[in-house]
Length: 261
Image (cartoon, rainbow, N blue to C red; front, side, top):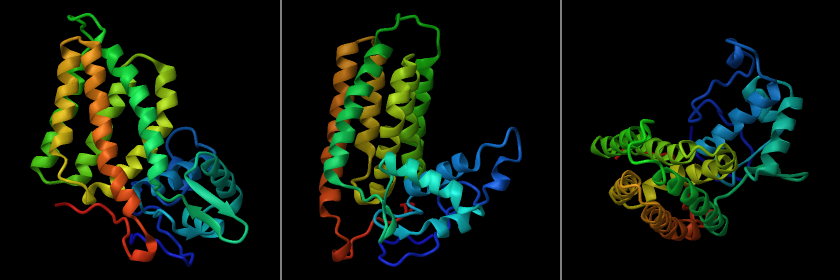
């Protein structure tokens, strides 16, 4: 799907780039069918995160309903929920506008992530040295997958594995409330990662940061693990903010789907 910063509404192909089927009815054949509004919510959000629905692009609820093969009612319910979560904006004149990527908002998101992930890595590093829970092995595997993605020069895969590494830090911390709080901000950060990865330096330094974080967790040093995580995230936002500040639809500079290097 072509990413547009467009002014004129068009019919987006939500299946393209979102990794999900375009038919709500058929996406829940196996198991207990989820409500149509929930499925519409998940599919529209996935399209926003992947860039299939580009930052600043406009679309109507009717167009979304046609793509998802449902009535407007579940789409409207999904749109209201997505607006509350700041994935899109709704105007009586302009319809649905996909939320742009704003530098100031991403600074706030990264500051939240620094706090949440800092607690998570400190918790992971506070486990008994001989903890037989395979968490260190999972994190090592996630680091290896990031390295392999760069060896294959596959940025799409690297972005997914980078997201997986950070999710593991949160999920394996043992704090379920922390995981629930972190879920939304991590998704917003992942969207920014996906849509700017081609505009950043080759992310080998990020992989090195991952290895350092893992080393301090393995050493069971909570303070150093937290410092390593904070340094990593601050380097990330220092790279991301100038890219977002330079973004201007009028200049013709647009976020594009990830291309393999």
